[in-house]
Length: 186
Image (cartoon, rainbow, N blue to C red; front, side, top):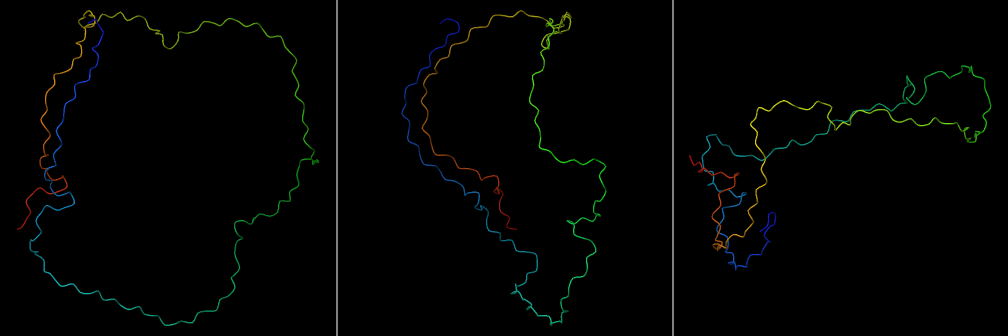
């Protein structure tokens, strides 16, 4: 096969698969306890619960209220009212009657002879070009010559191997949030 060509991709032959089997047993889901009931006697003294007792509401005796009266005078005006004296200082500017705006028409300026363009002056090298002198320091590393690329091994299809039929899944361990220790019955 010439260098650089690849083998064409080929579809493998169809193989019959076995029907899947049912799943094996599972442990209880995460929300179910796997521990034995908690049967350790308490070291605290117990008492019976009592029904709650509620104190009935009571009404205070009526008291005589003062008659409503008018509001008293306010010390300061509300925030929206000016506290300054009226502005009565005469203006130093001469007064005039307003006039309607007048629009000055656009006018073309007088043509002026322009100087001839000059050639551009010298420019610095662009940013992508080096302005340094060539690097002539010998390398301390051992050098080697580059070799041509080696040819690739052509792709090939592996031999067909019969797979065992799928079986039942093995039992699962409890999830991380469930205890795996023996219940305490001491």
